[in-house]
Image 1 (cartoon, rainbow, N blue to C red):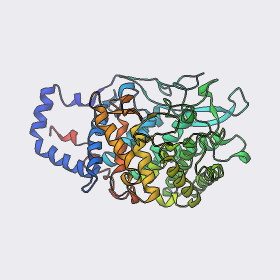
Image 2 (cartoon, rainbow, N blue to C red):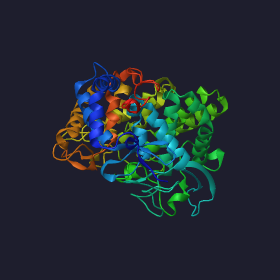
Image 3 (cartoon, rainbow, N blue to C red):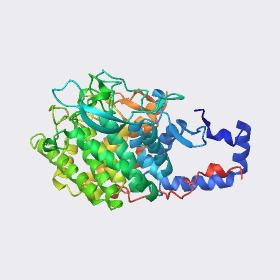
Image 4 (cartoon, rainbow, N blue to C red):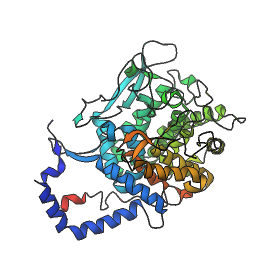
Length: 475
């Protein structure tokens, strides 16, 4: 289907854009002040505001609004130098920023995945060579590459029969799809959408259950299946560029904690719709996952294993990453139903933050895993926000050195290239991920971190951004 940039329906030239912008200068300036107050409220840490100012440039430089042949609008985010279109693992991490700045974007992107980039698969489990068990709904890693959309139900990135980079991310993207859909249901202020997509929510919980085990009696909250999409390969996570500690999906502590959080978010969605039966299914899955996590915790190491099924001595700071979006969605009360697990997560964070573990012994920069020097500032921002919440401290206070290094990565390390999201933690220099949009995760560092998601409420969907103010520029 033929598509075009949406602005071409109103503007024929750069000169016309400039002319209209000048004519609307007073109104646009007032709108910008409202926008700034929403995303960076008065009293926010000036250094965080600086980081968000730079990160948002990377985000908006990668975005476009596209009108298809039927006149429907589609928000598109390019993944920086890698150029994947609407990468779903980025979309999940963008939620705190997008639901603060322009909530309609989240609904638009996840609708695109549900309608055109979802699929249903079959599964295989340990010891099996063919995928013969019912799977369920999941989503592609992306919607295409550069200026092209991939065919519906397919990804520009994912390939079968691989282990490592370019394999399928079926489990990861199922969880990311849940994050986007459930967060929009909880925070998007669109009850009609929440109700209309309820059948999808039921598919999502069934897909999670099926990936635990085909035998309900053997389900323990760990999503261990391999999708038929990988062929003979192995599923991977969004941390594809790191080592085996975080790369493989099955049993990964990051994925298990994300499973727990996703179940809690779906539970909130079902409760909002009065569906108590499916809410109980989600709660039961969350309990199974929390129990498996708590059993895996080592009091001697004061940490979780890198992989609940395969063990591993590496320390994984990225295990905290999945809690950021539920906290943004004001779900601290739901997380607090698991005091033992939260206490273990608190101890795990303290262990990781010790110098020489996930804190670089020389620079104090934060690593996502103790075994890789490739760290991602966007994810460091999320983990610092969660660590602060666990300790009832600001992210800056919970680890001053990590906070200072994050600020340097966002600015000083970018002065010869651009803001980048893969940094060598030892040198502070970019490894890759240039022109990256995901750095808007620094939105999580705003406000009072002991009450995340409440300190600066997101704007109403009927607000100035959600109403698409550019449509009125020429009127």
